[in-house]
Image (cartoon, rainbow, N blue to C red; front, side):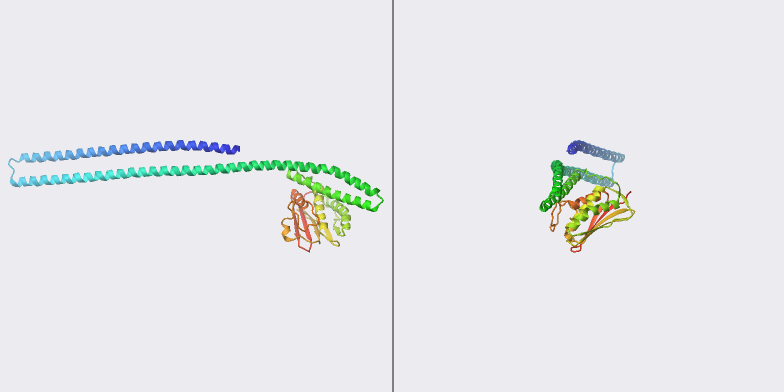
Length: 388
């Protein structure tokens, strides 16, 4: 808005400057036209006077010469008289012709001058009309620019209000998600205690259900907190050198029992050689856990899921492959969007798991991709830049 006020002030200054310059130019043009007309009239009048005086002098000189010639003849003969009469007639005719020619020349000059004046007048009228058209176009353009500026200001104000509301919503969202973790920890602790001390099988099974539900709720809260950090631009990584052998061994130890309960075989290829790479351990575990969780959810009993790592001097690639139901082609382009869920999801969450996987991969400077066919399973590849 400050920039718009400066633009409006600049326009006002420009308008004032243009008006001053136009007034000065118009005054200069009017003075120049008036001076030119006066000078032209003066020159014409002077030329006419000089021409008249020249003709008069020529005529007086001719008359004087003729009178002298006549006085030298004492008694003119009839022949001389006839010659004089003829000469006078010729002189008179020449004078009349000269006067007519001079008069026609004067008229021609006057017409030329009048035509020039009309052209100048027409040009002035055209310039005035052009100025008026230009002023009208400028006025229309300024009005449109002012309307656009007003709309932009309104949009910026609405956007700022929306941002403030979004920031407030995100702050409340993060605070609630964080505060829910404490009572959830109490629920999990008590459920574990009940499961360990209960003699009744149904009680132990119920306590186990509570523990699993609480664990799932805990994962949802972690996803919500991460989403709040992403929106607040506080999502950070802690890159440290870590052993890939240790990482994959931890994942196998944690997820094999879960897969066995679902009747799905999990195969984790742990390298025999201790490979070390630099990454955020907890975030990569979160990423791979989301992929393994999706794989077991969409793989039927008797199916299998494989996890292995490929490594070269430039990149580190984690691969998760399953032989489950596969993903329809129409869903592949939306798979990593946040809050997106497939119509075929049997156990709906928030639609944040794969979105967070992509966020974690990109935060490392890498990328995640998927290849899938309906009925032939899916293969996810997480490529991270290799650094040590």
